[in-house]
Length: 336
Image (cartoon, rainbow, N blue to C red; front, side):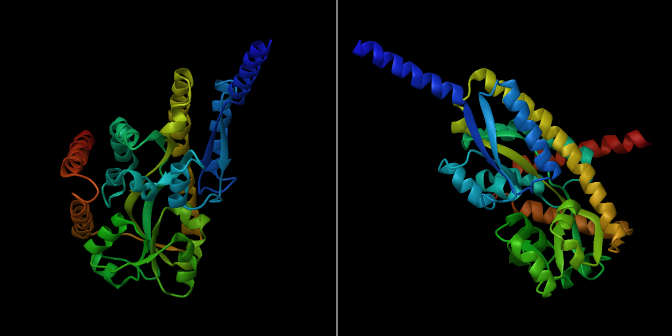
């Protein structure tokens, strides 16, 4: 009888554990009510519905779990399991992924889609070797330079008191190529630093510029994208391994679907924000001189190659640049 009771108790506990399902604690800097969070909530519901409640996300928005480095630390100690990251956070885990954030690498969205698509499996494998599962790309979008004086050529860049995201090697290499000594600050210090004139130049996506209210403290935008800011959703492999094989497949399938949609919607939001910025009175400056445009692209090339051996190897950079060169030749010939 005692043995029977012990078995029944064990079955009861096991059943309780199984019925509770797997909870995935997810954190992001994205504010509640944003497109990012709306898609994340839809994704969370789809995962729960498709797995009959066996896998559920618990979401912590608006940076309540800390910045990206704090979120990574909490994932590593098991307090969180998943997060949405920009290139800065991704690079803390896998430095070579920062090649996707390198300056003047991409000229348009088609190029971004080409490379991010071709390299998804490559980086997924690399992240898994670091004990993270790459669920999907979730790009921030093209980043522009905003200043309080117009930029007409590369020489004008040297007089800018430019902000740099503290600890970001990509930004450091980029501005070094422009012969600028940037001022490193955390994101939370940027608005105040613009107000006090500690800095008079920033780089940011249009959507983030409006969301952070930085657009209220700048007067000009250089209408030449500095870079495409990459982003992704990662999951702790330890938590992923707790899922059944079927639920792992479901999670991967829904991730590709919803985060693909998120990228599409983010691009639409950035386009709307860009229009709002223009309508608010910020002047857009164009560089029409082809030689000047080439000088910006050459500065980007120097910055990218200066990071070989530091973030990524030459083989990866060559692979990306050569693929883009061939794609551009195809695009050019198709227009003729």
